[in-house]
Length: 184
Image 1 (cartoon, rainbow, N blue to C red):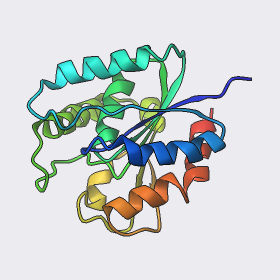
Image 2 (cartoon, rainbow, N blue to C red; image 1 turned 30 degrees about the vertical axis):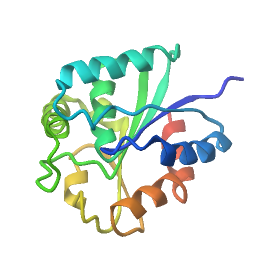
Image 3 (cartoon, rainbow, N blue to C red; image 1 turned 90 degrees about the vertical axis):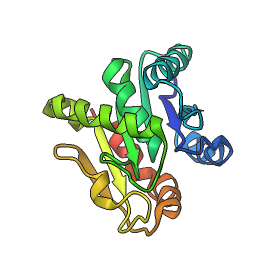
């Protein structure tokens, strides 16, 4: 039996080394894991081009069905990909901003948030039910209200601050996240 494919998209720093460690845990949970950065550091690039390049990387995996965990800014990339390609089955957005993030100056992220807001407005109930937003009790970078959107499933975890909440979600709450990915 083949393992389900999981793609992890790092946040704005594109730090793959940290996510490679998370990938080990997710492999132990039975997934074939790929860490694919979106390229947030190239913040003057065109979002449409970045998104097309990212979708190309997903297609190069050669899979019919992919689940994605997008962390922070990576959650917006995951939702954009979900909107544009039916090979993506479910999305988990961890500490992801669905609203303007004044504390971070990155044109790519700003543009992706606008696209995600428009996308989520037109999604029907079924499309929204395939997205889970995970956020902590308090986040100094992405305020918890920014990680909430009507109709999207939510999981509020027992954690404080941005980086620790990402860590807690990807490790201590991994079984809860796996349960969401295994549904339907």
